[in-house]
Amino acid sequence: MAKKMLEVKGLTTKYVTRFHEDVYAVDHVSLDIEEGKSLGIAGESGCGKSTLALSLMGYYFPPLHYMSGDIIVDGKNISGLDPDTVRKTVLGSDVAYIPQAAMNALNPTRKILAFIQDVIRAHDPKANKKDIKDMAIKRFEELHLPREALDKHAVELSGGMKQRVVIAVSTILSPKVLIADEPSSALDVTSQKVVIKMLREMMDKGFIKSMIFITHELPLLYNVTDDIMVMYAGQIVERGSAKEMVFDPVHPYSRGLMRSILVPEDGTRSNKLVAIPGTPPNLKRPPAGCRFAERCKYAMPSCKYNSLPIMEFGEEGRSYRCAHSVEHLREVYANEDRE
Ligand SMILES: Nc1ncnc2c1ncn2[C@@H]1O[C@H](COP(=O)(O)OP(=O)(O)O)[C@@H](O)[C@H]1O
Ligand code: SF4
Ligand SMILES: [Mg+2]
Image (cartoon, rainbow, N blue to C red; front, side, top):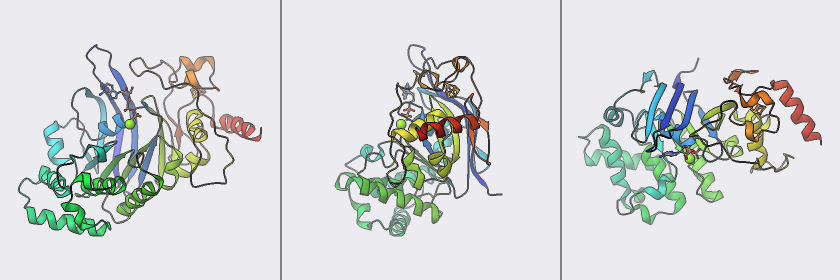
């Protein structure tokens, strides 16, 4: 059996706000990724994707608080470590994280090589400048990035190049898990493809041992990740292979996400474009039962009161969280598609 690079069990975190209205943004999330594999996480804005990304690093600072659960990276449990230890021993090497809009957050007055020095010296304060430069040049060449970019300031690079550089800088220590939060969202379609190709190449070359790719667009993940999870209101509602999730989504919310955006690469699909009515619930007071009940057209009266666990079904690795059986949902969808 392939080695697990990341295993997360029941991770629960919340934002503690000034007025004691805590935001329960990550609720009992469990997931795993094998070596060499990638996992996409999709869901609308406000569903907790970025909070999950932050929480997975095991690096907590207010207002985000760790509540419970385990984060095991290549056999090492990083939950409950103090922030200083996480910064020195986990970030960059065990888990690398590219925040949403990272490329726009780069300090424009610093050179790219200086950012690489920061990442390496956080782990090895004595690393010398020449070794760091040699390492950076080698990695940039391997990734077909111009070595001159190392001596440039962030402000001198184009959007697409800046994002590729951010990825190269963040992964210079060849992390076991890369978490990329909406890495292609701010880019034009051409740059988006280049960034995605680069991430795949980095996986193939072993520069990253596993990857989590976060996006609000479920169909985008079809050609990018092996598996996909859909997140709604702080919870995982479905998981499966990318192909199953795109062509046979079972949870009503996953189906809604699929139908609300057309598959960019695939002109053959005949799904109608349908927006999901409503918005995700306020996570200060999450609904007691199914969190999607307010917006679900298949909801039954009991859905508002019964909170369900995520349940496995069918092929290995497939799971969903809904009161209807998979067979029933598939039948309903098939009838709708015939209409
Ligand atoms: N610093 C914060 N303090 C309090 N609440 C926050 C903070 N950041 C995000 N939230 C809330 O947490 C929830 C999840 O947000 P987020 O993780 O950014 O979702 P997504 O990335 O899916 O758009 C939202 O309700 C958001 O308002
Ligand atoms: S549990 Fe009920 S409300 Fe929730 S997704 Fe299933 S049918 Fe819809
Ligand atoms: Mg986000």
